[in-house]
Length: 430
Image (cartoon, rainbow, N blue to C red; front, side, top):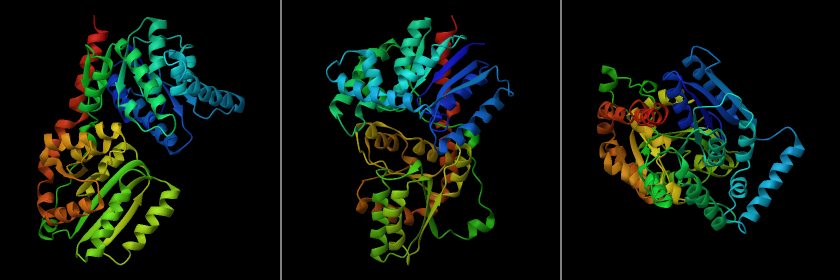
C-alpha cells in the first residue's frame, strides 16, 4: 500500500479528473490524502457528496482517505488582504523579475503558497505527489524537493494559451516560464487532449514519460434505455438538445446557439426543438440572454428548460434522455482550440449524436470518430443550418444511438485509467 498526495487549487466537484484518479488510487488499495479548497459556492455541497462516494470505495476507512481543506476566502480578513496584496504585487514584479520562481508562482495563483505552507506540516509523507491545476505545480515541485519524493502533473489545459484580461503577455510569459522550469522535473505528465500534449511537449522540449488521458468517465455511470415497441411505432417529433457546464453564462457558445434558434424561428420552418441547459445559472446571463431568447421563441415550437447543476453520476444518467449533445466551443483562445471538454466525452459515452463547433481539437475528434457527430461552423447561420439538417436526420440518429453507445465505451475511464496505472506502477514499483 502506497501513500498518494493529491494537490489541487480547486475542489472535488470542479475537478473531475482528480476525482477519477483518486478513485483509481483507492481501487488499487493505496492510501490517499487530498489537499483542496473550500470555494464558498455550489461546488462545496457537491464536494461533500463526492467525498462520501470516495469513502464508500474504501469501506469508510478514514485512515485510507484524508481531505485537508483550505479556505479560498479565509475568515481572517487580514490574512485574506495580505494574500491579495501579495499576489497583486507579485504580478507587477514578475514582469521585472521573470526568472524568480517563487515570485512567478505567487503571481500565477496565491493558492500555490497556501498549498505549500499547509503541506509542509504533513507528518505522513507520501510516496508520490499528484498535482492538478497550474497553481499546484509549484508546491508539488517544492514538496518533491523537500521530501525527496517524485511528483506527477496533469496538464488539463494549455495555460499559456488562455485569455488573461490584463497583462496578457506578462501572464503568458510567466506561465511558460513555470512550465518550462518545472514540468521537465516531473516524473511523468498526463494530458487531457492530443493537441494539449503536442503544444506542451513542444514548449518544454519533450518529456521521457507521458500519456494522453482523455476525459472519459466510468462506463457504469451511463445507461441506454431501450425504446419500447410503442415508442418505436410513435416517432418522436421533437429534436431534444442538451448542453451542460458548471455555469450557464457568457462566452460558452450559447449566444450563437440562441441566435441560430432565432434564425430558424424566423424562417417559418415547422420543426420542434426542445433545449435543456444544465448548470449554475448566471443572473446577468439570465436577464440579458435567456430573457431575450424566451421572447423570441414564445410562439414557436421551441422549448427551453434550465436544470440546476448535478453531480457527475446523476448528470450521466440524465443524458440518456436526449438526442443531440451540444459542444459549442467558440475558439475564444488557444487553449479553447486545443481542449477536449468533459462534455464531448460524456456525450459520446451516453450515445448522443454530437453537434461540435470546429475548434482544432473538436475537428480532430470528429475526424477520428465520424460516427459520433458532425462539425459545424461557429456562426448562427452555420449552426442553424446544421440543426435543420439534424432534424431531418433525427430518425436515423435515434436508430443508431445504441451503436454509438457501444463504441463510446472505448473512450471510458475504464480504458483511459490503465495509462495512469502504468505510469504510477513504473514510479512506485522498483
